Length: 158
Image (cartoon, rainbow, N blue to C red; front, top):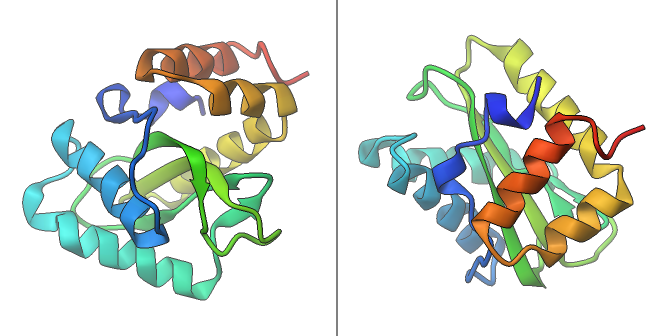
């Protein structure tokens, strides 16, 4: 699975403004709403579902990265977005560091394989320090999109 299979290009945010875990999640869900990937009626419920998942254990996996995600019946296919916070956000990360890179996923409950493949792709790409460094330095959504395309073309992972 590639980023292009599930990342909504119109929802990518290069300059997140939120300064809290719930704020970042709401900002990224709003980005999916603005891009037409989720319905306004489902916004609050999706945010609640992601926050409930965070209660099980932070999706802040360390090294400035978080992958908040949930399964939700309002979507008929896996959809995701990417956000970058220049200053970083306290996300209760496993390493205690602030998070700058966010990959948010919402998937249908009946497609767990897609959800797992997307998480696997994200974690594989994010193991590459060069990819992460470039993402953190991205100034525009176009910069981020280009990096995702390069990652899809295996230009980072050996």
